[in-house]
Every structure is written in C-alpha cells, then in structure tokens.
Length: 143
Figure 1 (cartoon, rainbow, N blue to C red):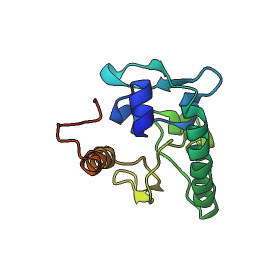
Figure 2: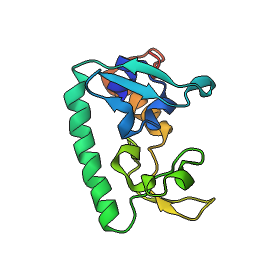
Figure 3: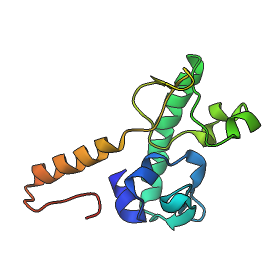
Figure 4: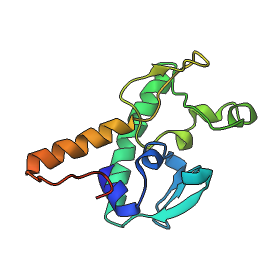
C-alpha cells in the first residue's frame, strides 16, 4: 500500500477507501472517488505496481470468497447505491482493495461487514520502517 501511495500520489484516506473496480490495469490508472473536496479524480500507477496489485487482489479475492461462503461478504456502499442495487454489496468490484483483517458490526445498521483497513496502520508501518532503517529525520507518508 505504501508503494501505491508513493507511486500514484494517493492520500492515505483515498488508498484505504479504494475499491477493486477503481483499478484499471489497461490504462494503469486509479479512479479516486469522493477525494479531497468530495471530487473524483484519476491518477496513474507504474507498470511495476501491476503484478504487486494483481497478486494482492488474488489474496483479497480468497478472503472475499470465504466471507461469502460464511454468509457474510457485504461491504458498505456509498450514498443510495445499496437501495438502487441491492446485490452490489456482495459483488467483487465493490470490495475494498485493502480490507480489514476481520469482520465488524456496523453501529448504524447492525450489519456484519468487512470494512477497509484503518489508516493509522499505515502510519505505524511507515514509522516502524523508518526506525528499522535508522533514519533520524521526521518521515511521514508524504515524504
């Protein structure tokens, strides 16, 4: 995920909310939905990221299939899409590219779903990597 942040100019919030259908391998681009200022935008990713993303998404698809087999597999849908397309919440294209490790209960609806990972995990991973390499300057995902 950090490589994707660095190579494509995504913000952390945009990366954790990224859906499978928003990754276009043919054009090597990512569509960011409701980004900063609640606007959509398109950004690119390098060809070197393609096999990494494909490998990652194969693993995520296994998680998705297991969730479906266990009677779960739903994901939060934006706006009124859940009413407009009632089966979309279980479709592969709507899954998060970076899902959480475990299912959680939505406090508003009571539905059990797999959400996206928490962005604080990314910040912690970057800080840990900086410590391990011995960099003494302040480093964030921006740098």
